[in-house]
Length: 141
Image (spheres, one colour):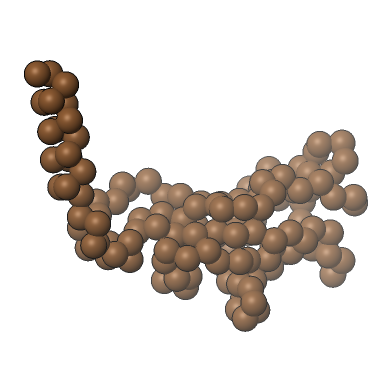
């Protein structure tokens, strides 16, 4: 009898799922207040953080520049840690939801490009996520 009850319960649960709801319909989704971001750690061959002078983040293939401006204090924090932003939840208005988005990260010391890596990111209804790409880049100075 318990077995039948479990089978009925599983069937009811399966039928209660709305299979027709589009994954792009986010109106009924409750999002957390957590702010998600994707960053890359740039280190040298000895494992020490690399202080970049500038970065550029570009959406591919249309080459749209997604790079943000940062104040000096924020940039100092990035440089000291060697950790640089690629994208975060605030990019939701600039990047489509529910699709893989190709972006390129480039890091510069002076005018010399020292870091170059491709990433795939995606947004669900609430947050950005990393699909693929290296979280740590080793560069020669």
